[in-house]
Length: 369
Image (cartoon, rainbow, N blue to C red; front, side):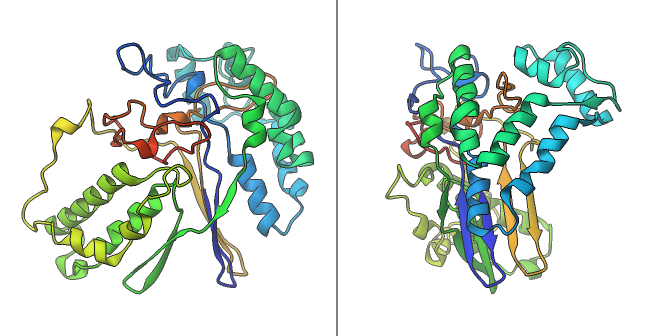
């Protein structure tokens, strides 16, 4: 997802969320007992969604870029081909992963490990020739350098060999979309954030609308009451996210305007007890647990001298995604299909429930986690 605020006041957003393959179904991860089969929604070939990053960056560049596309991609081609010194941090991570992770695939070992068996030592030059060739095709052909031709064939062939669902047709049909961002206000400030299928923008504006009705400055930062109010606002926003949000193309009645309205925030604020936490129905949870805040996902914000501002988030989902490197192409595949509700009708361990807005369907974009 990318949100752009131009120096001339223009605000727009680019949606390049992954999509479910055409062969996806709501119960694709379940065994005969309706339980998730071998973590297949997070690990292995069924966890891979149709990638969107190349399409999104290319669309944003075509719409707003000033430098030639090839000039922007070439440094990455050079870095992959010439290589760079292995760092202590990455070497340690790969060493632990190589020793303990049974799910590594042959192409992944070849890409990340020396001779496919052991991590490079810190300071050794790590080269990625297959990735360099893939990036060169993207440099020369833009969007089609990934979604059609040689790269698309390599992805589809690898998916078929590993039991995945993505085909050349899935890749050829993928398009990023420019769309309006979520807009709200908080104490006189304009808030712009990514709209669905990103869940963050709606939830953020809903939380801020609730909190706007409390004198937080008077209450005192990080006081018991302050933290209680933040928690209660978040609980309501996340409950609404779980019940209502998903891909708008598959959920035309999604109540985004109401969820982000001041009137609705007034209603929610009135349900908050200043001295008691709201009850949760534990029977609605299916082995839910408190997960640590993981280190996955990349985000950065950039502002240039002309006042153009970009806020960009992209991710493979987990560290190293599905752990699958496309043979002959040199890049990792995501495991974004895990962001769908894997068991329709039951709450999953990420705090979402199995309601229809976010169960897998062909070409549906999964709700961001």
